[in-house]
Structure formats: structure tokens, C-alpha cells
Length: 224
Image 1 (cartoon, one colour):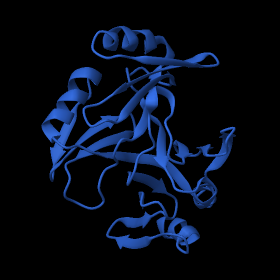
Image 2 (cartoon, helix red, strand yellow):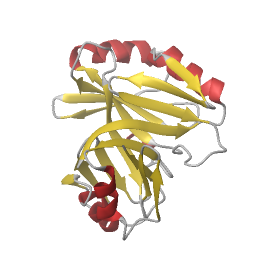
Image 3 (tube, helix red, strand yellow):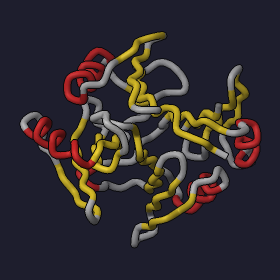
């Protein structure tokens, strides 16, 4: 149904400051147009937007970049002098966490495939009011739950990108789920995907090149 992640958009209070952060510390190349900045990250795009338009980018969003396992230590050594890093192990995998100037929790996990220092975005955390409701909504878009918090207030779902759905709380490194996050997906049939959740969506809008759905928690999902 949803074939791949296209973009994750974040809101930046000051676009120049946010752009400089991702260029300087993560060595990403930017392309600016129509009041926003886009970074190519593997097959994905990280988009930064100033306040003012709709859909807005996400606020205090926790998301994760993938890096090849053999590049992880390079990232740790590069960032350790600049940031108060938090590191966490997931079995044999490791991740480091730090914050951008707008309070987004950036994770770099050593599990990416490819030769680039950062190979893509593999996880996005959304804040939701009711995990069961959100889990049902995203389940109908083809995401599958494979981990659940012991308190049942958060779930992890696999799909074109890993989605974590958190009721309001703090996670590793005091990260929070994002609010009004804007995410774009490739879809085999954008209209069919939208129809599966239209009865629970806050809004469904036909675009010139796809369909935009706003989920029950105000997150914007574009299918193209």
C-alpha cells in the first residue's frame, strides 16, 4: 500500500540556523526553494520549514538517521566534542542521541546499508492522544506492530519507515514524539490508501500529484 518514505518535514524557527546545523554537523547538502530547505538523505528528504504555511513541519520530533555500522564510531567521535551525547544499545546495535536548535531529538543508529555516512531515515516518533486509536489507523495503512511498551502507552510499527506512536511522555534522552508532523510516502494507489482511513481522518484533500490526509492527532500524511 505505502511503498516508501519520501520526506519528513520539521518546523524551524530560524531557517538559516537550522540549515547551518544540518550542514555543519551532519554534512548534509541543502537545496532551498519556496521558503523551505530540503536535504537529500539517501532516498529520503529531510525538509525544514519556517512557521507560516500548512502543513507545518513537526515540533520537538524524535527521528532517526541510519548510518552503516562501520561508520558509527566516526559519528560518535565527530559529535562528542560538540554535544552532550546519549548512547543506547539495542542488542548488538547502538544509537546516539542529541538535539538540534529547534529541540528535535536526532538519533543516529548504526544499522544502515550503503556507503554514505548517513543512508536514510529509519524511524519517526509521533505523539498521539490514544495509542490504540492511532495503531488502528496506521495498521489500516499497512504498518504492523512489532513492539509494545510495557505500559501500553507506546507501540513500534514497521512499514516504509518505522513509526513509534507515543502517548505524551519522555523517551530515551528525554525525547518526545512530534506534534503536527508532516510525512510524505510513495503509494501504489494514493486514492485507495486515503480511502482506507478517510472515515477517521480529520481531513482528506486531493492534490495535483496525490492525496493529503490529516490523521486524528493532526499529523499530515501525503501519498504520491
